[in-house]
Amino acid sequence: MKAKVIITLKNGVLDPQGKAIEGALSSLGFSGVDNVRQGKFIELDVAAESADEAQATVEAMCEKLLSNTVIENYRVEVE
Amino acid sequence: MKAAVIVFPGINRENDMVRALEVGAGAGVTKVWHTETSLPPGTDLVAVPGGFSYGDYLRCGAIAGRSPVMKAIVDHADRGGLVLGVCNGFQILTEAGLLPGALMRNAGLKFVCRQVRLGVENDATFFSRSMKKGDVVSCPVAHHDGNYFADADTLAHLEADGRVVFRYVEGTNPNGAINDIAGIVNANGNVLGMMPHPENMIEPLHGRTDCMPFFEALAAA
Image 1 (cartoon, each protein chain N blue to C red):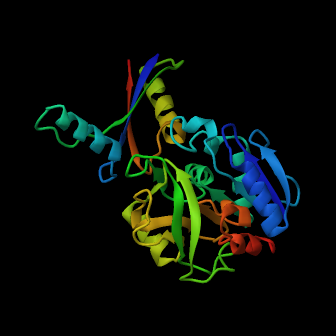
Image 2: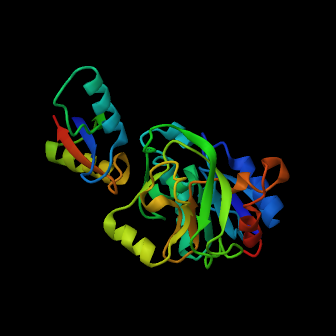
């Protein structure tokens, strides 16, 4: 089963890379851009009997390795 | 004193750490590869050196922090054994849960390689007891992800309990670390993580020897 993991920085955690992207967009003439936050996207295949099982497995992966829950949130989407 | 220096793929400061422990602390040092599941018998101090374990893939220290040898290091720390993490080693110890908080990308986004002025905030830990509170020493930093972050509760506890051992002297914070934090200890005081490299400021050839007392203190481990 295919799963997608989206990892973002928690609110309140400064994101200097997001700020740099925001500055670059602005200097390219894109006006009205605000609150740019960058993160990670991970795609993987996981062997599972059901979508629920896959969801639980990938969430366990996020807790153990894929995200650092001190600074990051994660979201799992199973297809 | 017997020390174990842990080596992961991509680590590059292990020989500096071995030399500092030998010269400064008179230690008998064994290098331990990350696939080991136990430490050499009689290990007093575990040092996790700097470098770029696993190429900093996923997050700095994330993969190394979950490698087989980490369980032995956690057990060693739980028994009260000393653990020192420098630079990538600090990142690895936070990822392994031995120290609170996280090291994020430098606020200026650039890799910084220079000397900072490091203030000694707590001279009561085993690691810092040969220094004096208020001392300011020169120490090199070389990192891309040294921006220490912890949530407000954790930070309040660190500060209230005197667990911030080293702080960048005002105006020299190279990475945006919260409260200018450069190094912290765990609640028991036996695990220290720091971004600067004291092992590179101990010999005349380094230019200065400011950090020699740090290693001399470890001799009694």
